[in-house]
Amino acid sequence: MESIQDLFVMELQDLYSAENQIIEALPKMAEAASSEELKAGFKEHLKQTKGHVQRLEQIFEQLGTSAEGEKCKGMEGLLEEGEELMDEDADPEVLDAGLIAAAQKVEHYEIASYGTVKTYARLLGMNDAVQLLEQTLNEEKETDSKLTDLAEDINVQADKAA
Image 1 (cartoon, rainbow, N blue to C red):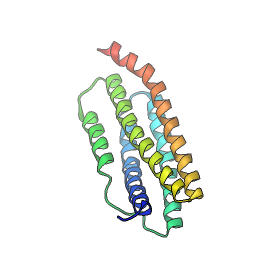
Image 2 (image 1 turned 90 degrees about the vertical axis):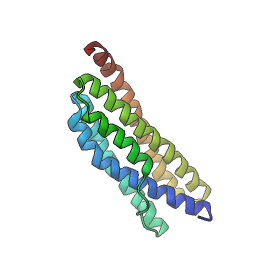
Image 3 (image 1 turned 180 degrees about the vertical axis):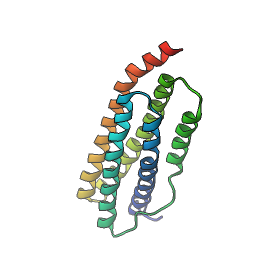
Image 4 (image 1 turned 45 degrees about the horizontal axis):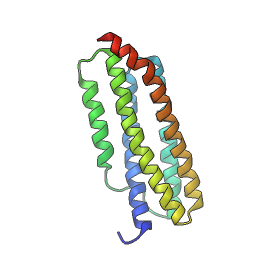
C-alpha cells in the first residue's frame, strides 16, 4: 500500500465484505425479532444494503479493480456478538432491545467507514464516487436514527418485562 488510492481501494473492499456479511445477518435478525416494527426495519434495511453493495460495485467498476478483498474482521466480530445474543434464552422484548443495540453498533461502524472512504474519494477527485458514498452514508445515518426511535419504545417494554 503506497498511496491514498491504495488505501481507498482496501477500505472499499472492507466495506464490500462488511455489507455482504450484513446481507447474510439481517434475515436472521428479522426472524429473531418479536416486534413487528423491528422485523420490518430489518427487512427494509436488507433491501437498502443490497443497494449499498450495488453502489460499491459501481465504484469498483469506475476504478477498474476487483471488489474482492480480505474478510472484514470488524464486521465479523460485531455480527458474531449479535449471533451470540440471538442464542440466549431471553425475554422477547429484552432480545429486541439487544438486537437494536447490536444493529446500532453495525450502523456506527458503517457510518465511520463510509465517512472515511467519502473523504478519500473527495481527495482523489472522484466526484461520482463521492456522490454514491454520500448517498449510502445518509441512508446509514437514517437507519441509525430509526433504530434509536424504535429503541425508545422497545427499551421501555424490555424494562417492564423484567
